[in-house]
Length: 114
Image 1 (cartoon, rainbow, N blue to C red):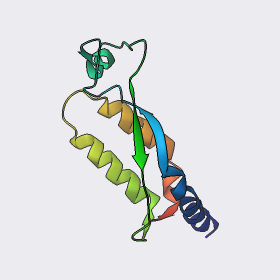
Image 2 (cartoon, rainbow, N blue to C red):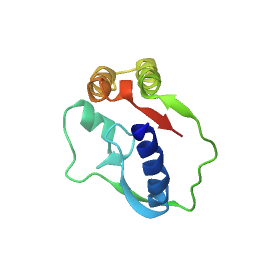
Image 3 (tube, rainbow, N blue to C red):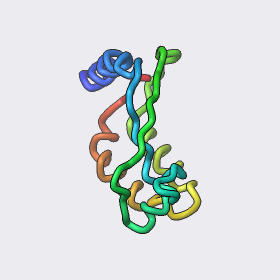
Image 4 (tube, helix red, strand yellow):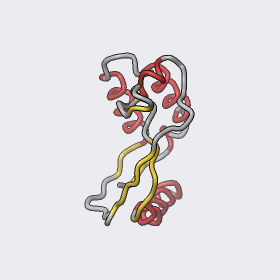
């Protein structure tokens, strides 16, 4: 019961921190170019450009439009099944293993309120 309340309360408090302007780095597996070369080509070669490009993002408002409780294990299974659907060499195995390792105990005992 305490974990349920804590997760829901934390979610409500943290929602407003996303409103406003902030700088966001492009992901390494994107098509954004640096010196004429897409970032994903650097990433696949195990390289990183000297500077990763950024862009300014603004979120004007955010609100919770629905609420439901989902057992953590269901969220974990959904995430892992969606990772498995990705085609190409985008580190699916590595990402899936990290999600599984992170959540192995956590997912079993947590209910998220959305």
